[in-house]
Length: 85
Image 1: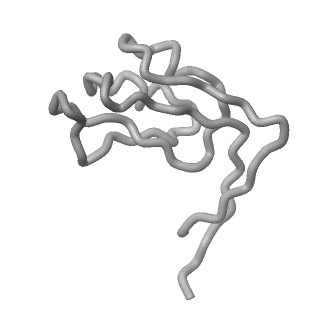
Image 2 (image 1 turned 90 degrees about the horizontal axis):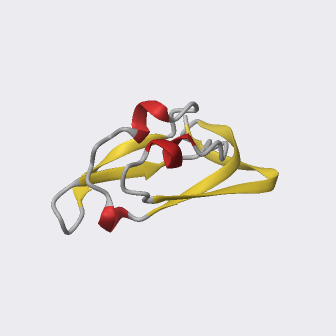
């Protein structure tokens, strides 16, 4: 049986991947380091960020994004996700 771990998420983001130009400014700006760049590309040919469990809803990605592709949501109560270890 594969090992899993529990990750607490206090928020989430939606990402408008079709308008992202792949600058990657959001990746190092994310304090919990839950954004990675995709292997896939959007219709303009750019890779875009993908969200993984553990978002805090801090909005750092939103604040650094020159293309305004992020929308940030904070949960009233933390959500626990079970992910592969």
